[in-house]
Figure (cartoon, one colour):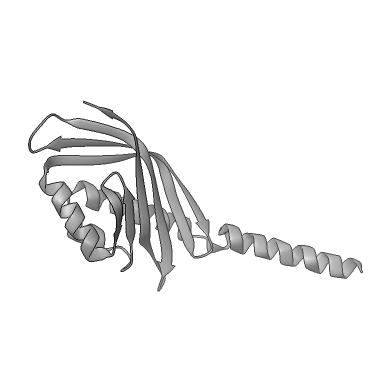
Length: 154
């Protein structure tokens, strides 16, 4: 009886490690690197590179579009329009947090987005973001992102 209980406890511990992502080792560094690369591509105003690095069925929702934008081509088009209206855009994540659960990962936190539009005054938007990644063929790819504005400075 005691061996059965130990076996159950060991099985539960292994299941916990797999569910929490603790069994993935270096994946946390890889997710952080993918997130940082996505931030660099966004701030470089490179819509094509940003979308190319994402999953084919990526979904973007939030302040950049009033409706969910689905797929690489649609996100590229939407971002190109957004970037074309701005001389400079700087999205700054504030204290990003990360979590891996199996073959999925989240990056979330607050952001400050400073935009210098081609016409009009500079705008600073504060908000929250969530980036969702999935591990495909050994690589973490962006499958969804959401931006929620909290306030605007002018």
